[in-house]
Image (tube, rainbow, N blue to C red):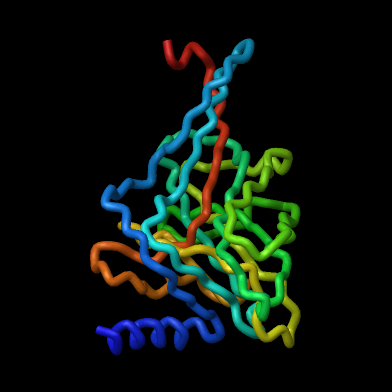
Length: 231
C-alpha cells in the first residue's frame, strides 16, 4: 500500500513538474454534500430582493499544495457551476490557505475569474479586467475572504472558474503560501503552466475511487430579483 501511494504522488509530480504535495492527517467526513448553497442571507430593499448565495466545497481531507521553482506562471482553479440558473455579480472569494514552512518564500497571489465554455466545459475568457492580487499576511492555516464586489464581475449562467496564480520570481526555489486540497465527488479543478497552454484537470490523488482531488476555494454571489418574481 505504501509503494502504491508513493507511485501516485510521483505521477502527480511528474506531470506537474515542481509542484510539491504535502499530505497531512486525513479527516474524512461521512456526510458527502453536493455543490450547494451553504448560506443564504436575504436583505429587502425598495424594489429588489438581494440574495447572497455562498458556495464552497466541503472539506474531507487536509492536504496542502506548495509550488516549486520557476512556476510563477502556474495557475490552479476551481470550477463553479451556476445551479441558480440566474445571472449574478460575484461578491467574495475565499482562499483556504494551509500552513507554510519557513523555507518557502511567501509571494503575492493573483486571482482571476474565467467564464466556462458551455461546449468544452473548460475555462474560456477572463471576466476580470483589473488585476486582483492578495498579499499573504502570515504563514498560518486560515480562510481568507477577499471582497471583489467593486469589480462588478458577472456570474454567468455557464458558470465560472476561479483561479490562483503564484507571482514568484524566476530563481525562487520554493514559493508559497500553500493552498488546501480536498477530495470531492466531482472533478472540478483545472490547471495550466502558462496562458499559452491548455487547461487540464489535475491528477487524482484520492484513495477513494468515487472521489477526486480538488483545490479548496469559496465563492459568494449576489443575484437581484424583483419581489414580483416570487409572488
